[in-house]
Length: 138
Image (cartoon, rainbow, N blue to C red; front, side, top):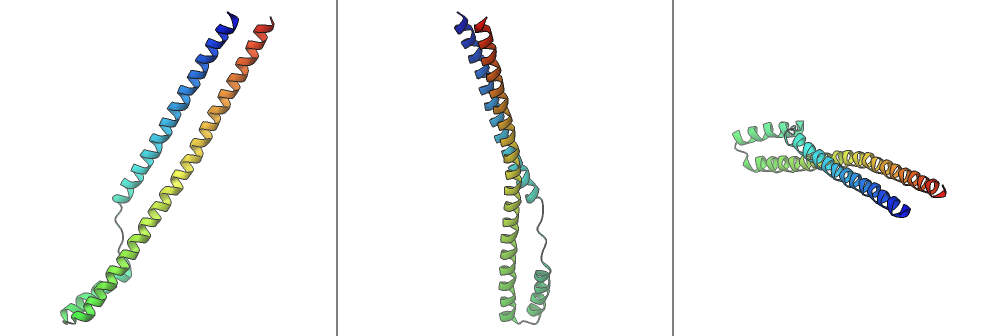
């Protein structure tokens, strides 16, 4: 009878901690998803600034078109497209780098929270075992 009662209590405590751990993991996953969405929204609404070089080349392009120098204008246009693509790629890689950094910080914090929960679980199990041993010895 003694063992059955303590086994039942241990099972209840164990289930409670498993439930806490699952809720914490779900919460962590939701935090990561929220942070990713927040980050995407932040960068979608943040317009990219045109590089001074592109603005300068655009003015040169307009002047060349007015002078009807279409071959040079086409070369300038290709250069503008190339610079724009490079700037876009750099901007995207910077955005992804910042997101990875933020998510890594979040994961470290979440791992610490989970480790603390495991420590509390182990402490509770050890206390439970001590109480059981004391009660058994009486």
